Amino acid sequence: MNQSLNLEKKLKKLGIRVTSQRIKILELMAEQQRPLTAADIFARLKTDNPKLRLSTVYRNLNNFVAKNIVSKIELKLDKKESYFELLQGEHHHHLICLNCGQVVPLSCPLEDYESKISKETNYKIVEHRLKLYGLCPKCQ
Amino acid sequence: MNQSLNLEKKLKKLGIRVTSQRIKILELMAEQQRPLTAADIFARLKTDNPKLRLSTVYRNLNNFVAKNIVSKIELKLDKKESYFELLQGEHHHHLICLNCGQVVPLSCPLEDYESKISKETNYKIVEHRLKLYGLCPKCQ
DNA sequence: AGAACTTTTGCAAATCATTTGCAAAAGTGT
DNA sequence: ACACTTTTGCAAATGATTTGCAAAAGTTCT
Ligand SMILES: [Mn+2]
Ligand SMILES: [Mn+2]
Ligand SMILES: [Zn+2]
Ligand SMILES: [Zn+2]
Image 1 (tube, rainbow over the protein chains, first blue to last red):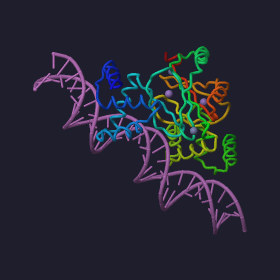
Image 2 (image 1 turned 180 degrees about the vertical axis):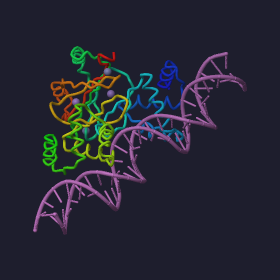
Image 3 (image 1 turned 30 degrees about the horizontal axis):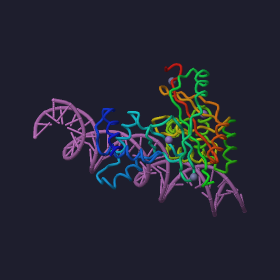
Image 4 (image 1 turned 90 degrees about the horizontal axis):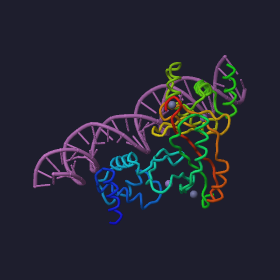
């Protein structure tokens, strides 16, 4: 309830309406501290709210991404399902186990590299994406 | 013709049959030194061979990826079309202009970072993906 | 070169993730 | 509670990629 109030404020600040669907999606993402797919979120929430639709989940996630409170990433090498995670804490990257899917957050090593590349290419660098893939201790 | 002979050998070495579709796809990828989508390749080749199908292009590209002579990458931030490029030269990454799509190859800065992360996490690192996004000199 | 055998292709339809149109329902300010 | 605007449910569409199957092409052996 404390949590919900927080989220309610967050949504109000963004200037979008406080709906139960939005609160539930954000609550779930906050409690599961890992990237989730729209289908993950939908599966989890539809048991409490059978009327919920996957399109509603997508619409809200896209909205959150546009409002910069959620980031959208392509996490898996083969599957092309998008993952979403709450933007909180520092900018970071991910290490993903190719076998079990476990995800470890990684600090960003690219500050200097970016400015070097910017000088070399005369591009204005706007953002970057980095993922490492491997086998976790249990899976190797 | 010299080129085709080379490619023919390449396919024979892989133990897959030499078909005109395969030769044409590889020729196109070699001449266009940039990542291409299946649709790019299809559009370009179907004028000479109207019977060619997109599914044939996909099947062959997937085959090449499995045989490790082509790499498949998700290049654009928003679009989820895959890009393919011939594996030749050094392992590298890409800098992509958000406006015009121009792609610049980047040398890999991650050797040391990978081993550091491997020690810290006890993961066995298998591979990584890095992309930078920005605006090229002309677009900024 | 021709026959026998195996792989690849053309073609159509399916699949998967995601988006969209529209009317009904819910949220917001007064 | 009212009027107004946004969001949702629902169904259907979309875009990229894959698949089943019969015909065509490539390969091997003679
Ligand atoms: Mn994360
Ligand atoms: Mn490249
Ligand atoms: Zn694992
Ligand atoms: Zn550009």
